[in-house]
Amino acid sequence: MEDITRMLEEAGSRVCPMKWEQGVYYLLDQRLLPFEEEWLPCRTVRDCLAAIRDMVVRGAPAIGITAAFGMVLAVRQALEEGKDVPEFATVSGEGLKQARPTAVNLRWAVDRMAEAISSSHGNPLAEAEELAVSIWKQDVQANIQIGKFGGALLPDRGGVLTHCNAGALATGGYGTALGVVRGGLSLGKEFSVFADETRPWLQGARLTVWELMADNIPVFLNVDNASGFLMRTGRVNAVVVGADRIAANGDVANKIGTYNVAVMARENGIPFYVAAPVSTLDIYTHSGEEIPIEERNPDEIIMFGRMRIAPEDTQAVNPVFDITPWEYVTAIITEKGVLKPPYEPAIARAVS
Ligand code: MRU
Image 1: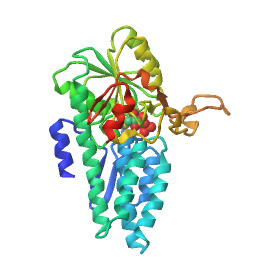
Image 2: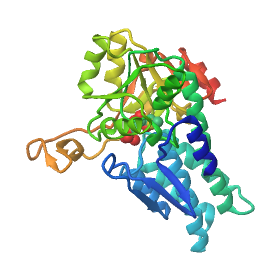
Image 3: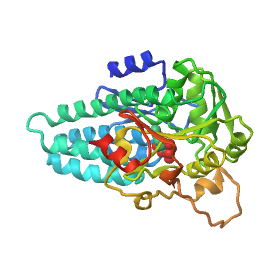
């Protein structure tokens, strides 16, 4: 863990949404930010599952890391209760995978952990812990590298728009889309960030603005519907977003509203970049049509906090991700390099 803290400090990013201390996994409760900074302890795999499902932790890579530590806690529980370790870990892993279906990093992390646990012949708890820490560390290293590749693509000045929060809070630290922002600024570029507020959970308003301000990065908050106007009037010159899953053909699943932003970017001749680690590339899913899109409780949009904003008995639909077809994506920035169309061969090479 000290390694990770040091890497983040050296990279100039202070925010990290998780910690692992004496066998307890702690999450910065993202439902409470920016008003309260409260760490929620996860002592069992069920705690990790609930934290993922209930949005204590969110963002594809951060969910994957949390699932990895959930698997460590499952191994410990199996040992304590005299259960078959691989069997209990596999069942727990299947439960974790259902918690949020769109983010492929969750499946990726659980499968890696389950395989290591099943093939362990020594100390499964120590081995699982070592792998979970290394999944976390590799994510931070990947983000810093993504920042280096992507930072070079951003404009020297003007505005860079982002949607949702694909920052330190959504990852093991540093961030993907916001990693690119950090990478660009560390090259001496002088752009400002425009943060879509991102209804209904307001990840942009609550989280992106908070973490950028924590690192003294200039940021303006805007309502989601302003992004087209900001592009058309020249205040936004590039877009960078994260991804929950990228299909083999380059179609991108990301927070609902990303597709609208991509269409607006193309209409206005502005580059639309997607930043994601290789663990977000899903070569087993051919196109975006096959990606499961999570739908959450309609109350998330009928209510604003505790206040009802629509009539009683309103029927509402609440898909929380959308698919941006690959044709709208200028480049996919990964830790292995910047992928350009045609994406199918570029993605296949990146994962090999
Ligand atoms: O519902 P969320 O907050 O988990 O959605 C998060 C996103 O859509 C992010 O953009 C994505 O997971 C990439 S995070 C590096």
